[in-house]
Image 1 (cartoon, helix red, strand yellow):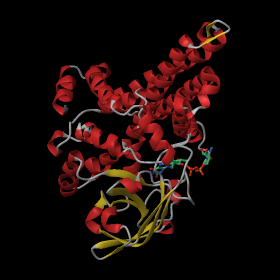
Image 2 (cartoon, protein in one colour; image 1 turned 30 degrees about the vertical axis):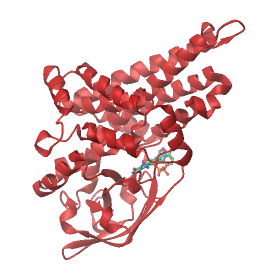
Image 3 (cartoon, helix red, strand yellow; image 1 turned 180 degrees about the horizontal axis):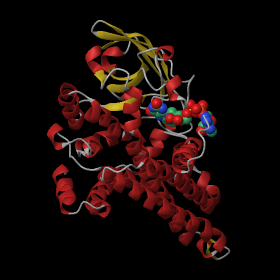
Image 4 (tube, helix red, strand yellow; image 1 turned 90 degrees about the vertical axis):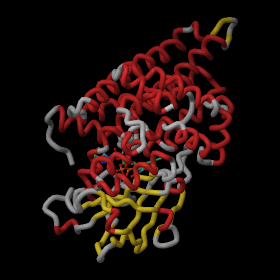
Amino acid sequence: MVQQFQQAHAADPSADAHSEIREEVAKLCARFPDPYWRALDAVRGYPTEFVAALTEAGYLAALIPEAYGGAGLGLSAAAAILETIHASGCNGAACHAQMYIMGAILRHGSEAQKSHYLPRIAAGELRLQAFGVTEPGSGTDTTALRTTARREGDRYIVNGQKIWTSRAEHSDLMLLLARTTPRDQVAKKTEGLSTLIVDMRDARDHGLTIRPIRTMMNHNSCEVFFDNLEVPAENLVGAEGAGFRIILDGMNAERLLIGAECIGDAKWFIARSTDYARTREVFGRPIGQNQGIQFPIARAYAQMRAAELLVREGILRFESGLACGAEANMAKMLAAEASWAAGEATIQTFGGFGFAEEYDIERKFRETRLYQVAPVSTNLILSYVAEHVLGLPRSY
Ligand SMILES: Cc1cc2nc3c(=O)[nH]c(=O)nc-3n(C[C@H](O)[C@H](O)[C@H](O)COP(=O)(O)OP(=O)(O)OC[C@H]3O[C@@H](n4cnc5c(N)ncnc54)[C@H](O)[C@@H]3O)c2cc1C
């Protein structure tokens, strides 16, 4: 299957070159229909079989270079995979982070780290699904984080706490951002932070505690506590103190991929609502004949198309090596708003049935709401645009 991707990509590198990938991903997703996700949602279970199928087919290694056992594809292919997963009614949140977290190792890791971790991640032997940045005390103000990693000989001693570390219970490795130099000893608050690979298989019960957080949707997010956890110094990614830049470096890819997932969600909602509006009859005619039903769906469709174009523009710039911070941020914001608008229109179209679990609308509605808050909230995106695109004074 990975070979098919490579051929399709080589033949036509434009975004639409991925129709074959979309078809193959859709076929895989058809093996995981609504009842599968509904049952997991009820118990907040992890979609182990779905993630295993994606791994086996090579999709989660799409961005890992061929030299390290991956498919060596571009971001547009990864976006096509995630968009299709969501447009098919599945949920990439169980594993999407692996696609982009590994970028920190790929771009900033030593050759030893790359050749040790990347082939194992590509083969599915190691899962790098967890990303420990957010803390309860600092929130969006990342540089105020309090988790420390103190160097002692050939190891770091980690103390502190993370929150919203998604998939921590289902990942072998975590990419951790911690302070290695106290804030009052650095010139800028962005300095003195470092990224470490934490092998959670060894660490649990040796200084690492993971506690799941029950959330309104099935997301397998956790609190993680570090109590004198020892991490080998060789697990430092990039230079000590350069961690903030390393995390920032991965954010455009993350935002564009989440944007693609939201486009997929919007397409799923629009497909469900138009099908239902055509077939549900009230007052002796299809409800879809009423403009009051048509217009919210049509508006959501227009919003989705506009956001989709910006996602594509951002990806094109990313793949061309151009600056894409503005596009990535705006694309993620508009795509998250479009999927929410589509979800809202769909609930309204389904009427009472929109609230019944067996129709799956309420579940997707809960799932897609997240993306206006995580991985970055709308206000912070607007603040970025105001400051970096419009040249307005910095507000924080
Ligand atoms: C389900 C879930 C999964 C997540 N997964 C991960 C993960 O895997 N790894 C990880 O590290 N993090 C993860 N996060 C954390 C996520 O990135 C944060 O929740 C998000 O960035 C918002 O931060 P916060 O919750 O701390 O909100 P806060 O920073 O407390 O902000 C609260 C509100 O105030 C607004 N606000 C704050 N400052 C300003 C300002 N200056 N101007 C205007 N508005 C402002 C924010 O936009 C937000 O709306 C996850 C969160 C959730 C809910």
